[in-house]
Image: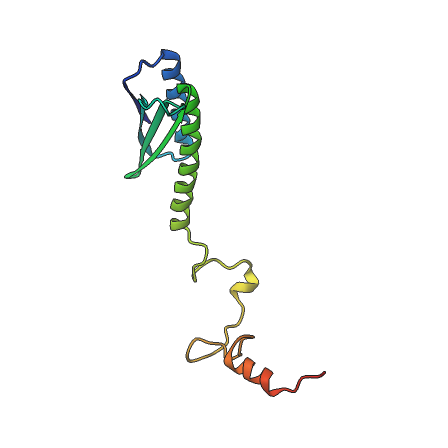
Length: 150
């Protein structure tokens, strides 16, 4: 994964820069097809904001851009926070990719055992088994017609 770091209006120490590159490189384990990651560091100018150091991360993977932003009093703490957010987003993204490729509730899902493969299918013209379910009209009519014991 290609990692690029941009800084705006602050001087970033080399230790923070190298630690940020290592932490962002770890994000590749969530989505192996990540093409590049961009880190952006800047400082908020508003004196009322206590957490002035801001770190933004944008990861480009499979044509999608995933972004996260975090702020803290120190740049390294902001990096740790934004990496935590990005890990969560990448897990969700990976889950969506997996659920789209392997849907759970499909009609063509695999049978759980060989007994299910060879179970007899009830004949019917319209695709129904003909047996009323517990909440069907016929079942409700039958419940109303039977006298209650009491």
